[in-house]
Length: 94
Image (cartoon, rainbow, N blue to C red; front, side, top):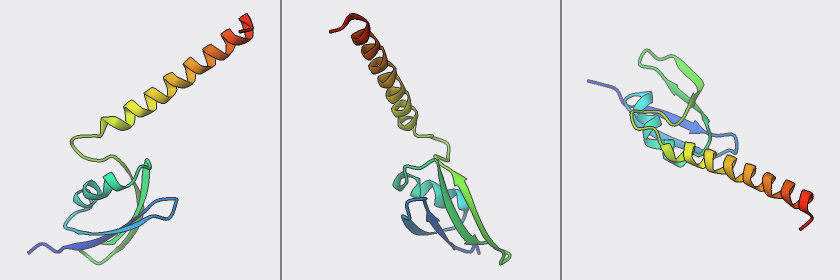
């Protein structure tokens, strides 16, 4: 029978979350919506009893959240547009 393991996740701001799952991938996929960072830390004990503490990149899984990429692109375009407007204002004085 498969063993359920406890995974502890955290981010740089100090938010922590525990999740019980059979695999790291399943646990990450279930908590990745709660974190907005690119990387989150995780610690757990393997099936053989070895303690692991590492970081994983999110989003992970088959359906990657496209909203993050869209937000980054939108912010980049907005910054470029504001820069062009500021340059035009300096050039034409109005």
